[in-house]
Image (cartoon, rainbow, N blue to C red; front, side):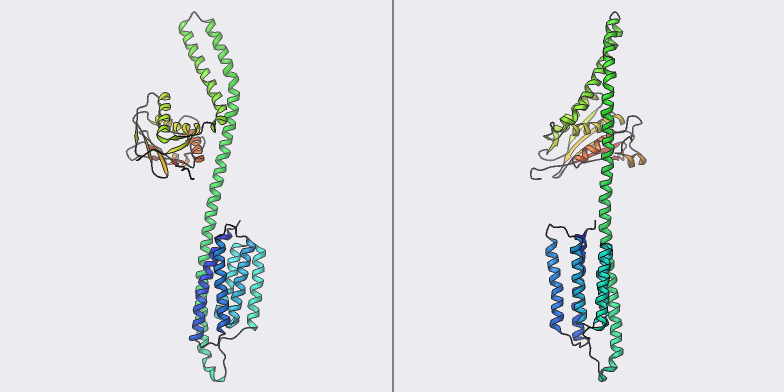
Length: 417
């Protein structure tokens, strides 16, 4: 669908330039050519064109969308006023007769075929009528025949000026229209990419749900068998200890599956306003329980009171995934940094791992792409998708001294937003 509001803005700009140019042409005709113009009729036509432009500017401030019929009516009004102006200024002999082509060029670039053909027929009718019905600029009699060549030279000069203005106007409009189309295309590409990611996420969720359902039965079977094996080999303490460890692991897997199946229902219930400091400290605490071998430092760079965020379980899990990725790259000397300004919270992780290659950086955030040589390659994809729901983002950079910088940005939502 064409952006007729933007097209109408460009049309008002073109109309302003045309109005200014025609005012100069009228002044030149009166004082330079000593033309016998009906100044009050010409002035009324120019005033009507200016009034139309003012009304158009006022209309653009309204919230209503600009439809194609409305834009068509604006072009018709332009053609009518241009025709009336040319009628009082020499008709088809006026070098600015090609001014009638501007509405046609604009319509051919922005409107449907039916409207373009209607405008084309109207322009032909106006031009044809101006060949026979017009008020000449200069009345020539026998005493003025010597001025024919002089007037012809002025006509040629006027044709050149008109051609120059037409080129400028058409080029300006087409360039602006192309920029508008590029912006629309970029928006469509972003929406298409988002739709693809949503489809991938939905497929991943369906696979996870199916896998969780299928794993429930074998885990239950393993727990029963492990209990029986413990009773059968009670006389072997070492084997019983190993069997108990296996049973604990299977119970842990079963609990994780139950938590995963309930996470969607509990997601909204766990949402709460939390200080960014408390959020990061909570995530680091969970991280250290899971990865006690990691050595880390935590620094705060922001000034003043830490802002609050709408925190959920999925947001905490996203930050935890990034910390796990850093620990997988190099578990020693991980630096965690929290910073903020008036609009954004920054969560940065510095590791001393091998960094990321150019090929890997171009595919980061896509499903089933991993930089660790192991794993499923879905952690960063899920993290990126979760942060996008908060209008946030995650980016990875190679550090000059070696390692990777992982930066998360999250916008601060104020109470009046």
